[in-house]
Image 1: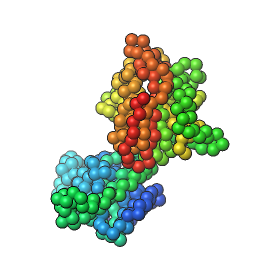
Image 2 (image 1 turned 90 degrees about the vertical axis):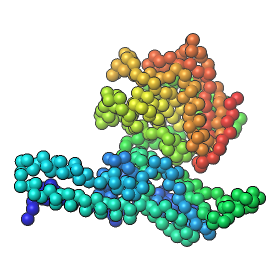
Image 3 (image 1 turned 90 degrees about the horizontal axis):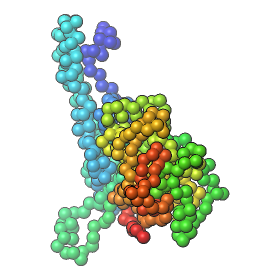
Image 4 (image 1 turned 135 degrees about the vertical axis):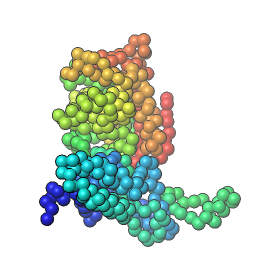
Length: 443
């Protein structure tokens, strides 16, 4: 009888648990008259249990979908709206195959010590080949088949996407199918009835894996119902212009970056609008500081790097979001604070946004370095409008008075001494819970 250690050395084992379904406890369901859709995203460890391999290590995140077609016609899932870079089931399996060459080379190195083991190399090759074949079957069986979903039919399976942690935004688009003769008829007879619009449902799904900074915020305590201040359209502008013009240090004795942004929308809408294109920030801990240091030293990216605290209303930001670029030194930082104001029944968030373009030495930080911001802070502010508009998540946008203008010749400075210049206005964005167009007011 082979010992357990020798068996692991000689035989490639593959033991997925296809029945595992604990992750579905976090599933989110949306209803439309034409379809009912449920979405769940397993964490990395759950995906490993399901598929028998560490798919997250390969940059793959399975998204489970269950779709019930309630319409009189067939529907088809558009996987590219979930992730333009999605993997097919067999592509995802191939990325996780046991490497026969790598395992053979490792086995060969061991065989110099245990020469008789060379005779068992064919066994190693055979078991790896069999495991990879079974892996293909599992991924294919579990994958969501991109085919017509017929009326009354319910289908389920996984779409293999790129990895997101904290919050995963899943845009499910179901396109009605029509006979080719009818499609051609609409082309040659412009007055004929149009094609039915697609079913568009957007899901904001929690994914375990990071400790996002907002998880320790009690928003109900920050904004008790008795202290909410509803504003009419006319009142809103005046109240927004009266908000603090700039962030401060913890003691409130010095001012810093301008508070150049206002976002109107509830928390779920805010996460849904930003999380598909921006990353959340982890809380500051020894582990996240070490990740940050490594990214800094290696010039690499760290999508969820902690963000330093700035203060508004006497407290640090309630939510921090970021868009990383080529390295950790090139990021757009966005901080948001919940205000007591409400408009159209939605909470109002004050914000600050700036773009990191490098690092520099400073005596104002404990580590003697700080990120250098792009002094044209209005560009970062307007980028947020453009980015959310491109995502179709803006109902309306415009500007109100803020910190006041200053020029490049006579700039102001933030808490770490970086200069900035601005036209002095705040951007105001009314978020849409679904994809839509928007009206821009540049006055």
